[in-house]
Amino acid sequence: MATHEQLPGKLNVAFNKADEYAALLDLSIATTGYSWTAEICSLVDGAVILSPTVTDYDASLGKINVAITEAQAASLAVGSYALKITGVAPGSVQRRFVEGICEVVK
Image (cartoon, rainbow, N blue to C red):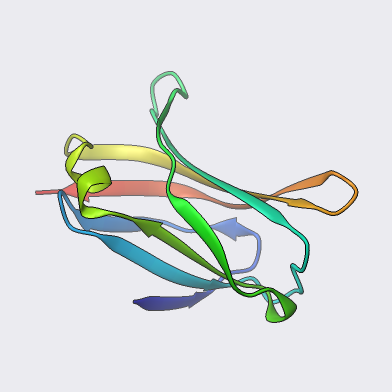
C-alpha cells in the first residue's frame, strides 16, 4: 500500500482495471471525529460512478486509508475520472481534502 503525505489539494492516482487499489493518506492534521466520503465521478457530468471505502488509520495523526476492491475496479471502464475525498468534522464543517484525476488503465 502506498503512503502519501497529502495536504488538502490535488492528488492524481492511477491503477489497473480489476486490480485492487489502496493508499494511506497522511493529511497532517488530527481528524478525530471526522466522517469521510470518497467519490470517483464522471468528468463529463459529475455523476458518481463509484464510492471507494475510506477508513481512519490513525485519526489522531490524520491518517486515512482509501481503498477500492478488485470488483469495484473491474466495474470501471478504462479512462479518466474525477476523484474527490471529503471529510466532515464534528459540528458539521465540511472540507474537501483531495481532488484529482483517477486514471483506470488496462
